[in-house]
Image (cartoon, rainbow, N blue to C red):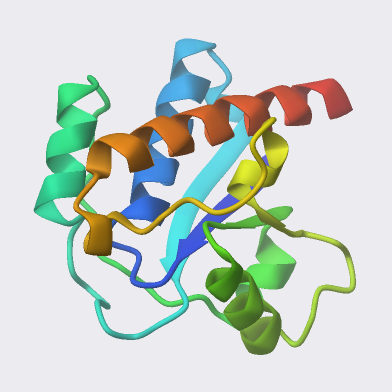
Length: 152
């Protein structure tokens, strides 16, 4: 089973969008039993809060179901528990390295680095462009899934 943890700053916009999109893609392909998918934050600001309403609305517009969940913070234990820890931007990656004490097994990656457009998923909290975040995250998740399946 491949275990994936998506990470962003607050765990209410980008990382839960990635979690829900990836779960949807896996379900569509009948691969649910082969994956464990979750998300977390690098900060404590939003702990316990649900998916941010505009992120939830964008997922609904795209036909992606949103599970009830509360934001949680990344822990050192997550490094042992997950095969891939996928950050949304450079700040997330820096914070993940700091919080996890490095990346000796090469598990930490930026989501968009699996695409032909490597880089960051811009934070819709500031831009209010949840449509663009959805587009980028969807592409990143599709390419990440293809990468994982190619590894098998």
